[in-house]
Length: 159
Length: 153
Image 1 (spheres, each protein chain N blue to C red):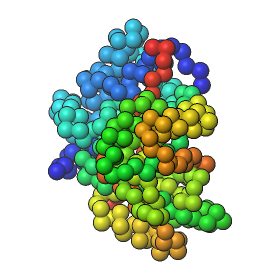
Image 2: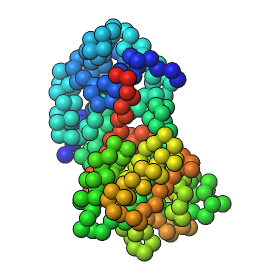
Image 3: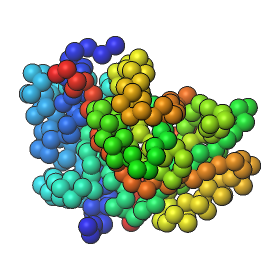
């Protein structure tokens, strides 16, 4: 369980690391802690996996990865583990998750996000993954509009 | 924006490893063979131009105690704007995309309990009059990668 102080640290950290010479000291002052104490808490969060990654979130569209597609696959239950690992091993695949199918409305149970320079690239990557895995019931779902995109803010409601 | 080689090296470096030490920017500068002032100026520019969306911690929502899910909804095209306004009004909805499929509205929901997920989905159904929503929480994670190699470095 997270303590109230942990939650305060998370609230402060998610605003971004200040661009000053001693950023942790600046945050620690706001939190009423020592710089050393805060550094130890952050390291502990990383160690426990509460912080998944400590670094920069980059807008990759600006870096030449212009096209991406969500590709959904209908994988027999007994092959999900193997196929999930296989697809995850490709560098063009950034995300790979198992999710529940809702047949017949929705038969797909493996979700990947593939990246390429163009939509055609994405189709070719999906075709390659299909051939290699032998999973031939799949759909590419290109996004046609972004209706909302925001960074999650934890522990802000009711504050 | 145009980025020089040092910008790219800096981005490659900080996507995964921001030092958790008293003077992280000075350490990055030493690794890159430049000054702390230069690193800070470059970061300010990359943030101002939107290349860096956020600098700092990316939390594991589950370990923070939140429940997340991906939802897909069948929305008749003339109603997209109205339905998006309802869906987006919930702060836990962090992403919402229109996709080419019968299930055309795809949004992620991140809230502090599984019961909240159900309550919000019920409220969305009631407010929009659309009952066909797929709730697709992940049951297994094989990969999540959000860093990109910029080459050159």
